[in-house]
Image (cartoon, rainbow, N blue to C red; front, side, top):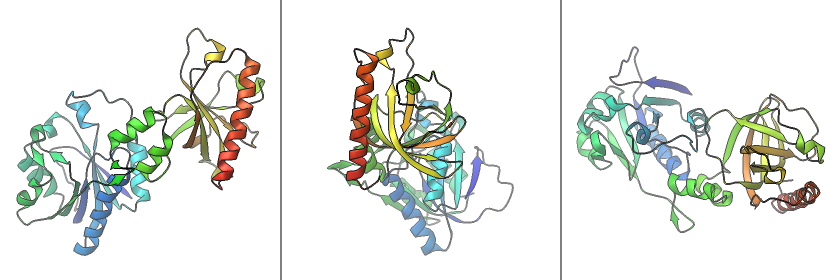
Length: 316
């Protein structure tokens, strides 16, 4: 997959191929986003051009001062990986700044889409563009003036409601990773490096890999989760349970949120390994225990419950 970073005004230094372009921010690359991308791929086949995606970075709402966006469902490197999995051949990453935001809807078409040789455009039903978000998805039809085809993708329903990034964030904030998986069409995951912790888990019989996130992923609610873990360097898939929280049993004077995963049937030094952690099921919320021995007994119960759940899913 070819990734091309763009700024406005465009400086195209070499010939670009005609494309069918899916446009959107696509945080999460959930089922709704995939539908928009699939439509662009279908149009590409019909028009005899390459399928491509245009996304924006950083988040438009942050640039425009409408929200402080510090964490993402799919930070940019993760988003690009997801696009590649979907068979996208070319990605335009458009820098979103106040200069781009100031362009009218007509200027966005004439100064961005036309120079990129766009022959087809696929967008979601709620897509907006141009200064003040004045341009709506339907406006692309008359602004194209017959130069490119426009397909507007309608919302997808799941569980009685429409799929959206907002709904996905809410599910993760509640620890409802099962609902998140339905919205995404896959388990929610994050990636990070194993770093040295205080090794408390090892002293109570539950050694953990402490994960330091490489990118600003949204972190699910505190609690204990059944997880699937992929060690990227050795292409190994493992199962375990992850605790997200502040470890209240140990009464640290300056508690810090940690992400610690206990991997079943593995006793190796993982320091420096890069792991992808998929959230499969939430066992319970975070809670303090009266003693370390009480915590240990609960962890034993958590492991039994995790293995039982995995066996029921025919995963382990």
